Image (cartoon, rainbow, N blue to C red; front, side, top):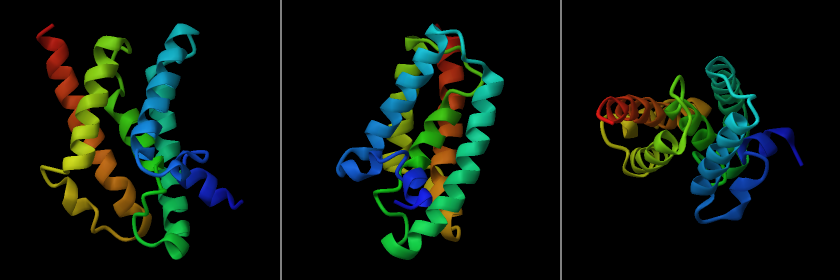
Length: 149
């Protein structure tokens, strides 16, 4: 299997079919939560992970677009990036992960507030940009949520 397909499908999750994006997001949430439990989580590492996911996602999504078409449902690395950005520089607990999960999936599926427009960007940039923006919106709203709790 090509490396670009492994990356684009977030290690094969994209091949699950219906619900693969949600499963990819749940996997990211579980890994981050476990990272806090084992004391390997840090906000700086999460930022580095987001940068790596963005670069790898743009490259791999651009590659697989040739075979699978534009923004194939098998490409779920964008969801992994979006969920990672949703939690950047936030305290990781169930009180932040659960609302971030719900909000991110809402923004990712509904695509309000200019999110849909970013899909028009060329190649892998359009695939990744909509989830990046959804993650930014989610992060902002979770910060507001934290202020009121």
